[in-house]
Length: 230
Image (tube, rainbow, N blue to C red; front, top):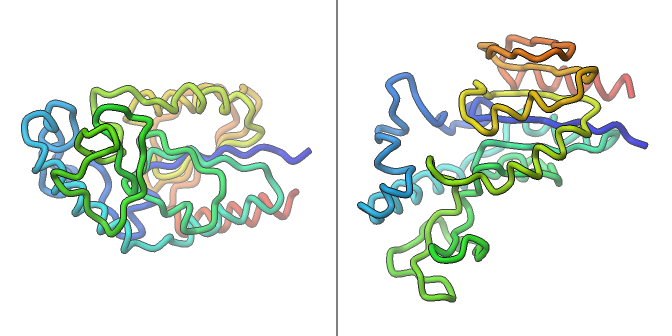
């Protein structure tokens, strides 16, 4: 049987493809207060502003290309059972060729019904227009998990983490819960590779291998090492 590698990815891996990290040092996201564009309350207050914000982000995502880290992670599929669990709402892992990707916080390239979250639609072009409705007659919204909303995929992700033989954490500050708690669910003997220019505080009993470097440099080297030993 192939060993199972679970890769947890955050905003840092996408930043090298030109996508801004979720929260800059000033607490803003692309110049906006997060409370004004990424909460259910913001959607109730000013849906047009929220829609415009995500339409702009979506265009950036669609124009972005995977970097060396995304491409290298896709190579692991050749010899390992791999699962990427990402906090990112972009599709850069898929563009790089990864076939098994779980998006904890949704996917910006899809719209969804305001009435039934299970009704998803692939977006044609890069915009969702106000007045564009689902089959139930409710306004379409971005398929993203906002602050204050449940994370539907978290239970499945928790279940998968317990099966990992190797864990790689890349580009995440481990600041956003419940996703940040996933790393603690790896079995105690499972090695955890942590890749980031600024290593986050990781308090787990597992063997930790810290690689303080950009993902685009460190991940290709790590992938080659893992493939060579398999």
